[in-house]
Picture 1 (cartoon, one colour):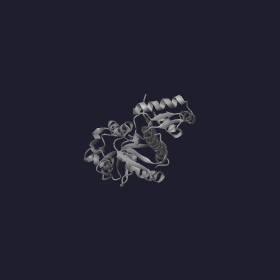
Picture 2 (cartoon, one colour):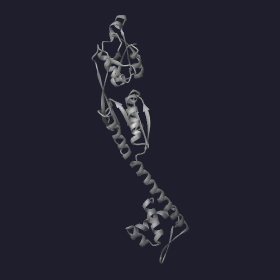
Picture 3 (tube, helix red, strand yellow):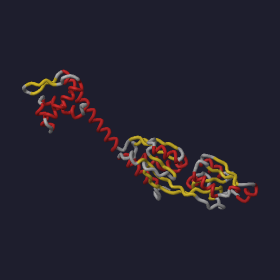
Picture 4 (tube, one colour):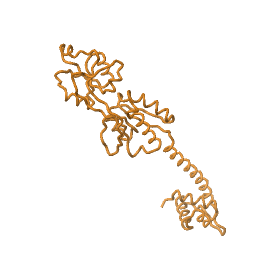
Length: 290
């Protein structure tokens, strides 16, 4: 059997007392247990560590060396334990937050400054991708927290609903649908990668529209603002456009979006993680966040 951490601890106590019985008494164990620990150490290092005499024991040169290194090792171990415990309780550390770029534009300018004020020693790295890919990276332990639209349910995930949004057809204030229809079909911009776009397209009479694609919702909003065409947009993205937009009056079709805070159940358990989670929920849950 290999020696253990306790074996080293017993050996150091023997080195302190120079007596097996006294060491056992101070450790609260039996003398045979101390003797067995010394034997395991001597077998592991293939050298005698103690010389027994009438008054107790003396350390050999190997024993003296082992005592010195054992004390250093134990001091390092205590420091290691302290650092690990502190990492789980101090409000410090590095965390990665992932979300869709458009979600980032209407949440992070509100969220990040507030988190920095509340927890100034936390480092936050940001990752942007489609919500389903962010979710995959959370499941794969690559991202700590995600702001995810309509997340998939997964046994490893904890999902907290933050707020809802509506995805619909939007146009500029000056967009003349009758004139556009007279000139030809309406151009409709959408991100084909989003399930919301796919759902709305299925509900529309596509004979009325010429579908054109962009994978950037802010670009779509800017084109819509210039009356180039219509756009399938979440309301919060449309409202962030510098030029005001309005719902397209000839379509009542809407898809509901649910923005959620998502993280793994088995990882985010430290005090820092728990405080960060609660802060994000508080800052982004309506009516606190508008």
